[in-house]
Image (cartoon, rainbow, N blue to C red; front, side, top):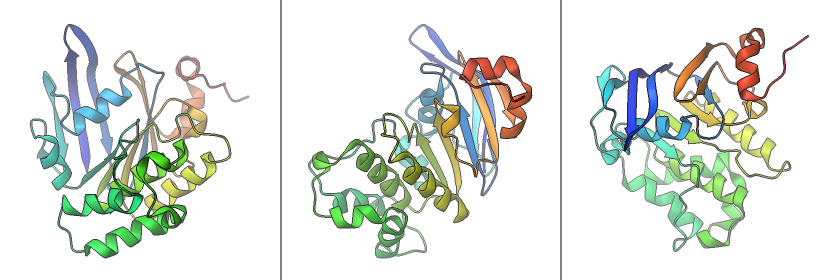
Length: 237
């Protein structure tokens, strides 16, 4: 589905991503875990075309997308929910969701795609007429993911979907991500807290100072004490 091969990204004189390689298989849920500033957001934004690699290759279904503009990446079937949610404050919840259906044509109708988004986040249905600025942080996260889902993507990129949320709403977001994964969509989640990694995760990558220092099954990270110290976990007894 998605493959990054030795991707390097500079922002001005700073070397942000260093030979980053990772793979998201079709229908899998992959988490990229790392501390703030480790390179998670830059990785996702580079996939989406907001950043251009200085070297390396990004492929979607075997096709190079390394130099494509963001709108072309979205049209190929990658949905993106940014860390700041990116909700349009002057639009209603319904309008925020519906706008994604204008971007990409799929076999599903616009109304089917909107209904699918609401089925995963039913709480938003009751807020359909509410303006984007009149939502809590958790509701904005839900709306951001729902809007990306209304694109009817094959792959979802979720940047820090749990960041800044109250403990009460974390299980709702996690359950919704699990529901999306069970639809057969591929998902790449960037997350700072290893304890928020959804239970449906198939593969875990750990990034530190722009480099991938671990890639493998989530359960196996317990055998890597050095990696656990980086991500703030604990070694299993």
